[in-house]
Length: 461
Image (cartoon, rainbow, N blue to C red; front, side, top):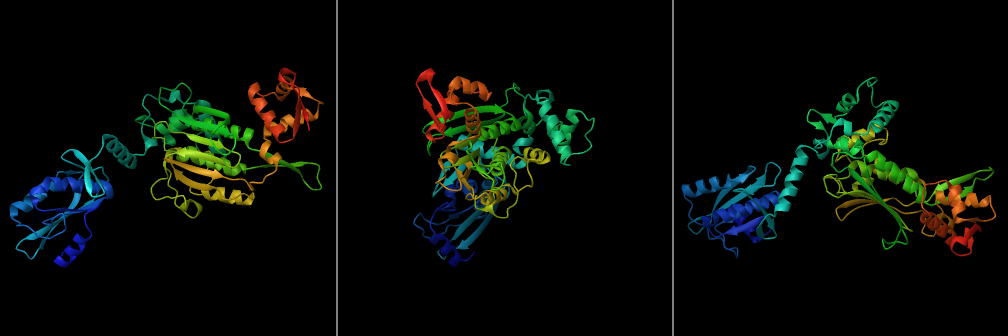
């Protein structure tokens, strides 16, 4: 580096990747700063012989000085690439430019302590931030779902769900040669059991109720009144393995997604059109369970339905290299949980890796709905669906599949009380849930109710 280039560098001023020191008397502090820069952006430069105001004065550079810089730099762990350049200052000495760049993933420490560059200052890294970065590095080296699930054994897994998975995989020609094989042998073929034991992926995919304390997945399902989370008409939370939670989420959507029914021209039959296309919702759910960041404690897959939209949330942001914008074009598949994704794929639930988000767009447009919205917010990834038109008919807004069954029951009777409807409905739901459904039908003008309390009767409008 020549003096002219050094002047241009110094003219930038101190910041995230640049620091000035008057002399190597502040060597230890300077290497702490380099450590902080490595943790902040992966590279950084410290220039000795420059004042805080940016005046290049230089200093005397002896062999001892060079040796001390080299020895101090080697105390950064893991090893970083450090380059030292001497630039004559024109004032009888030289400025010393020490640059560092990361050769391996951090976090980096100096003398056993981690530092972080924030703006133009260097701070001790907090314990929680250090733990987070260490965990992130470990995930790069060994993905979370491949680690052993502490305390879990094959006997703690849902054997019926495993059998169903094998049957589905064989049926779609994505698993062969398993006839007569024991469960553990099959799981080893799928890499869900290793010599280290049952993997976390196996616990997430097949963990039976009452497993040995290791948290499996969770799904949160809510139907809100209006367009905000102020009042919930229905609110449920379930824990269990991924396939069980997927079925529970699908059942919830079947109960709550409005369905508009129209007569097919020239035919004596109806055509039921859900407000949101079912294949797209299913794809969003499968993606959420497959790519969720299970390493985040307390995370979940959530479904939030409002009067004007439906949202599927999953804990964790997109993997590095992916953005919400890229998901609507050609993009590489970057499964966070490769073993979990592979099992869904073998079961025939994932059509093609890296295609799910594009498929949702295609399905929604084919159904006359807007493209789904993809967003990262609050440490989560969100898929947001909107109906074909905000000005849907009252029937399409209000009537669910359960509502259809209630209307069919009332069509066969002049009028019925709530207990009689509940009995004929034949579903395991509470009276309160039925009353909520009746209220929605009544507000939509599809039924009328007379009387009060237990004497209330209902009839088709």
